[in-house]
Image (cartoon, rainbow, N blue to C red; front, side, top):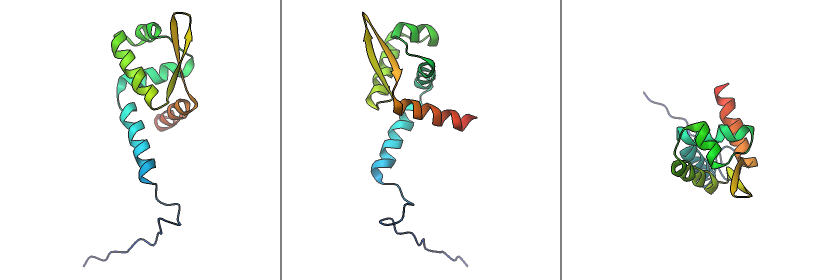
Length: 108
């Protein structure tokens, strides 16, 4: 015989459930960081800012692929770029740093 127990939570008053908006935001972040190349870029930018040419050297990816990944990371506000003469140095935002820290805590 199967006995089921109903949940006694009230999603409107209890802090047990996340909103669909929060779940969608998390889904977007996990979708972006699920790509190995983007993870490499995030962890590279953890130590210091880099221009596209530096990221190309470190990751052995093409410039166009890196630019594509940087655009995806920027859409979620995980990184930003700052112009330095002819180059743009990319760095982690506060949100990006939190994501990298969270990912590191999972593997440690």
